[in-house]
Every structure is written in C-alpha cells, then in structure tokens.
Image (tube, rainbow, N blue to C red; front, side, top):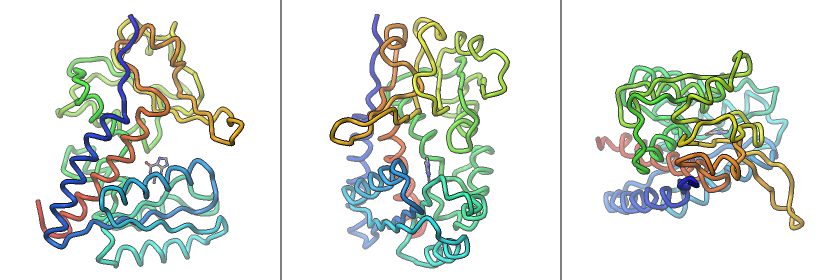
Length: 294
Ligand code: GUN
C-alpha cells in the first residue's frame, strides 16, 4: 500500500492563516511584528530561502526587511549590523542565513544576536532552554517537523525514532525535542551520523525515520521497514530544468520508499514550507513578548 503524503504546503497554509489572523489582531493594538533577514554572499540556495522567508512574512502582514551583503563583508561589519538590529525596537526577529562565508566565525555572529530576537533559536541561551524543556524559540525545522507529526495524527510516544544527521540546525535539536515529555515527544531516539557503524541496522528498526544529511536519494526501500513514517529534510539540487529552475531531490528515494512507508513527506513541498512558517510563528511570538503579551 502506498504511503499517505504529508503535505507541508497544506499544513503550512493552515498555520499561516492562523498567524495572519493573529497579526491582524496585533495591528489593532498598534503592534506590527518586524523581521530582518541578513544574507551574506550569493549562494543560490540561500538566496531562494531568504526571499521565500521575506515573501511569506509580507503575506502575513509582518514588517520584513531583507539585507543582502557582499561575500567579502567583514565579521566586524556583520557584528555591527546585528548590534544595530538588536537596538532597533521595530525589529523583533533577526535571522542571519547560514552558512556564512568561511572568513566569518558563525558562532560569534549567532552569539551576538539578542536571545529575545533569536527567531532561529540558534543562540546558546535558547538552545539551553530548549534542552531543558523551557519556553523559548524553537529552531524552525525541528519545530516544523513536530507540527507536521502532530497535525498528521502520528503517534510518537514509545516509538523508535531514527534520525540521520547530527547538525546543530536539525539533527541535534530534533533528537532533543523528541525525547522530551511533550507533544510529538516521548520517543526513543537513535541518532546516526557519518561514523555510525551500521546505519542500515538502525534505519530498518525505525518507526519514524528523519533524514537530514544532504545526500540525494540516500535512503532506499530496502533500508526501511513496512509502515515506516518518513520525514525527509533533504533539499538537494541535482540539476536544472531548461528554464534554469533547480531540480530538487530529498535524502530519501521517494518513488520506491513511498511504496513501503505509511506516511512520507515530499521534496519539495514537505518540510521546507514548515520551516518558513515556524520562523513566522517565532517572529509573531517575539513581537508579543516585546509588547509584554504572554
Ligand atoms: N540554513 C539552513 N537552514 C537554516 C535556518 O533554519 N536558519 C538559518 N538562519 N540558516 C539556515
């Protein structure tokens, strides 16, 4: 039996409609959430993510500004810009798109963002609070995946969740969130990475498999069990159409694995729209907190 497709586009649409209403309500109190996105350089994938974030923000009534800086921007200049945004009362959320050029120390920039404006949830204060299960900004991709699981009615309690990839943006926070006593939590977690001795052994036991490694079509049908839930975080550019549009593939071989899975997220149209939507949710939350609401 073929899997049910989890449409991130549809779930994101529902959450965005909720947020749009919330933003309209805030406007009546003269509160307009403000987001600044900062992109350094011209990486095409980063450019497309950042412009999608800005477009979505504007659609929801969020005041969104995109700042694009040249690839040779100094660390000092970027720190000065972050500092300016930290001090600007109209700015509730600051997002510095990663990866940054090699000459800039990523940690130094992320640590400089005011934790109250850290809508990516990457600042150590927010990471620490997340691990402790305290109220904070959750990182957008793991947060979006939790929402997808909840809104698709997928049980996680007591399940074997196998995560592929140990990045700070997806793998590590995902593992942490799903082991917590929370909605879409209470799972038993295995996190596999490049040094895992026998990854297939783990993937074949997974009730829920979350792939976030950045290798196109890595996971094949013979590496998963019948009825598995597949969350594919990979956004791999494997070519271009004649009109120059990027052709995308996930980390999971969709066509074969969907015949075995019970649920599967497509690429594109799966996790991606959820990541952007949770950024919007965090920005609205930041604006409310700045205004003393909640
Ligand atoms: N690069 C890849 N994913 C993300 C993300 O969620 N936030 C930022 N700032 N950069 C990213």
